[in-house]
Amino acid sequence: MAQQYVFQTVESNIYLYAGHFQRNFPSWHYPREQHQLFELIAVTQGSVTMFMGPRRLVIRAGEAIIITPETPHESFNFSGDRLQFFCFHFNVGDLELKTQIIKNLGNVVAPRTSAVSRAAHQLTRAMVSLEDKPGQNQTRKFQVEIIFLKFMMALSQAQPVMTTAQEYSEREVILAQKLASGLFDDEWARRTFRTVCANLNVSTTYGHRIFKRIYGVTPSEYANERQFSRAKVLLEIGENSIEAIAMQMKFSSQASFSKQFKKWSGMTPSAYRRTQRREHHSADYLG
Image 1 (tube, rainbow, N blue to C red):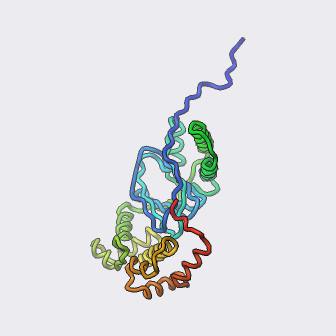
Image 2 (image 1 turned 60 degrees about the horizontal axis):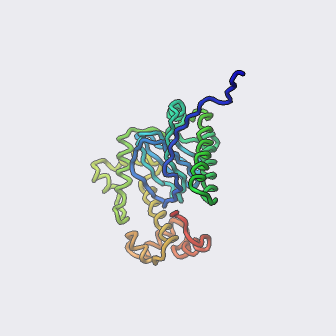
Image 3 (image 1 turned 60 degrees about the vertical axis):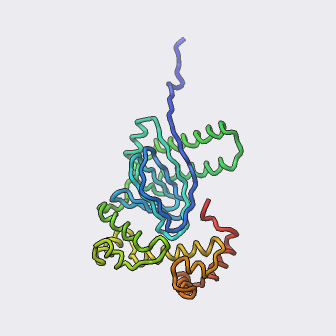
């Protein structure tokens, strides 16, 4: 009797490392890194701005990105909102699929409606569901592999994602990042943009133009948003007094801080704190 093969030999080699949820403060920053694995980021709340050399990408809630091995990337939360995303690193032994991901899907923001983003967020929900279920280590390992293989199957069938990233010279990106980091010292004392430009030996006009081009806002708008975001965080969490927060943020007095905060939000710091405590029994910035 002739043999009938239902399937040919299957050899699978996948590697998953450190899948985790991350919740971050406004003005969060993760320094430049690169590694030998793929990295999936699926944003569930807020948005993350990512620089890859001369390219700036913004990944918003519902979107996703697959960062390819050895790609330098640096991440920021410029939005002023809470940022939450699911992230994990992986590799695959199938060279054909690996090449397909790098060529067609890597280092590009996948829109909410794309197969890549849908699969990424399905994977995220499945991982959340798995965390809520008890199970032995070996069983859980197989469940994670099954979830991941479903994600890989979706990637193998996905159409190429077209890039909409804005490209700049790497010199301009680096200068803009130095200008942004120079606006505050380590203790949140704000510097004038003129001083920052002088320290970097560039004219204020040129620095302003480069800053607005890269970040999409003026240095003043950026600095105000960072201060406002920081103030909201300090008011929402912890038990520090408003006077202590004003000192921590390097305002000359509590009255000066309260006046500025009311300009930002339309309410006093104490009123904002009461509102947030009514809405949230406890802050959830950190997981």
